[in-house]
Amino acid sequence: MPIDYLPIILQMLVALGFVVLTMTATHLIGPKRKTADKLSPFESGIEVVGNARAPFHIKYFVVAILFVLFDVEVIFMYPWAVNFREMGLTGMIEMFIFMGTLLLGFIYVIKKKTLDWIND
Image 1 (cartoon, rainbow, N blue to C red):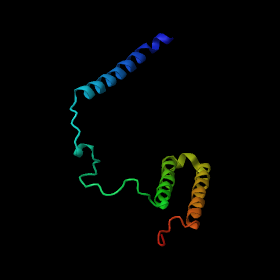
Image 2 (cartoon, rainbow, N blue to C red):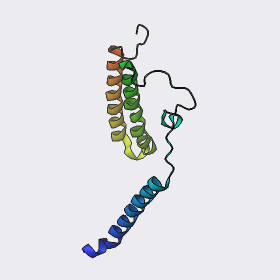
Image 3 (spheres, rainbow, N blue to C red):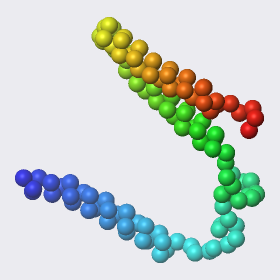
Image 4 (cartoon, rainbow, N blue to C red):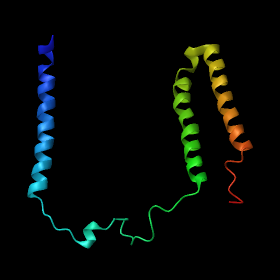
């Protein structure tokens, strides 16, 4: 029944109202001193040097993406390792297929020399 959702809707409205009220009050009541120190970017106490939009070499991004890609495999391997005995031979074959696919991807990365940094 729609009436059963009334407490949830009421709680959401109260939470939203609290957020809007708090943000509005702090914006209106809070200090408004804008100095050069407050408007400058904070870099952990280090003086800012240069432009933050300086281009990075694409290999940094490729290595980051590859790290995430190959790191995600651990997420899939952990439940398999925990339930290794229950899965039996079928689970073992499936994991060999999974690891083989990842190995093929790693071989492709090595053949493309994506991780070679010497002459860059």
